[in-house]
Length: 293
Length: 282
Image (cartoon, each protein chain N blue to C red):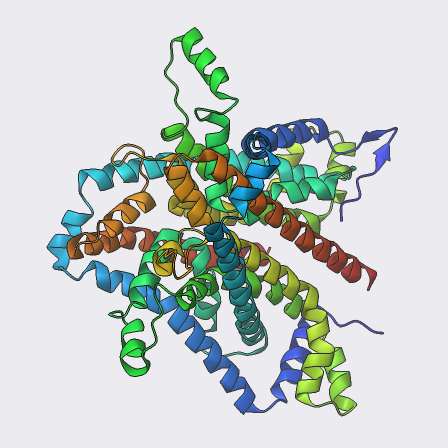
């Protein structure tokens, strides 16, 4: 059977589809539009409306309390470290999984995807079980502390928050890079290597230009998820104003229950909503760019 | 597929040892060893205690609630996911790019924000919940319906993003052939298109289902966490045990959840491997 080129195939697809009755088309489009409106757009509008219920003065006061400032700082710190660690891991893992073939490769890929299908609460629990009071790594941390005179705490402290955030966003960047690298194949790297290029040069000059936009796109997604992580951090952070992140602050305000504090919690939420919308826009721009490569 | 060629037992492209070492080390330290700790802690329990903890009525109800609601939500997502992916791939209309971009919103919006917003919107005084309660007497927040709505919100991008690429690559010559042979539109869809989409649909379903079972942030507000009405989800139970410092019970329940997650992940991977084999055989 003769195969069609991409453009021809697309044209045929649209032509084939066009033959169906316009009623079907518009019923499907309006179903989709209604779904998107009720499930996705309305909640966004609702956050903004709820956050401005008491006026702008209240809004600015609500987002500039000491608790919110502290939470913002913790959130940013955790996000920056998470993105650095996961970007490094993502590049290494995707290089390994696409440029080489070895036994157990598929299994390794599955292991990397574990955080996708695990409850974030279990991620928090896992670190408590490792570093907490009854955890096996507790003596190790104690030993380091007594030898070097440091006071490192992991559970219910900032390192725990950072670890939890890393855990839940671990596979995000490799997930974006692997399909791009797979599609690109290994011929170019092999040629460069046979011509005598060293590993770093090959990566910088041959591989990196291909994955540039996919990497940016992965980093953006990872940032968004790291900023908003809730379940895992909730298990590992208990002190408001010290180890709370923005989502935890939102939770604390919402659960306080008074009308004012609920409005305040929506005000803090609106910061994250604005970030989410910016991320969505950036994501679309970069997705478009990485596809057109 | 990668096809690194062996040359005198070595590999042409450099960096195998380095990337292998770093990947395994980071994966072990950050993910595998902490999860193994959960496993070992739960082995400290005697089988009898373990069994007693995981068969407590509230734990069993929570499992039923989480799995049942996640399953229904994933089914709803498959239905709307096919429609959305079809509309986004096959039709041209104004606002299409915005619609396409909006699909990702649940990925980007923090779950806690989604949770409090949905909970407020669907409460008996909310924008949607209010009219529904006044006109039909239906309560949504703090019931299973609310829980399912939150899970539909969380799961929809998984399904749409799994189907979309497959639908884009689908060769419409088969549809053309079906049309020429006189098949009706619905027959063409169920006999020609749906079988091609099935692996992608299963993957999307599996991902949305897995995410739904373990979901925490977006469901704990809207569910109401009422033990009598069985609206507690399993993640909430684990968090509650953690807060009461009942670590043994928390690990025992977590172990069951880990097993469920692994099975689902395995299922998704098998579907994906089969799918890639099918595609490469064509």
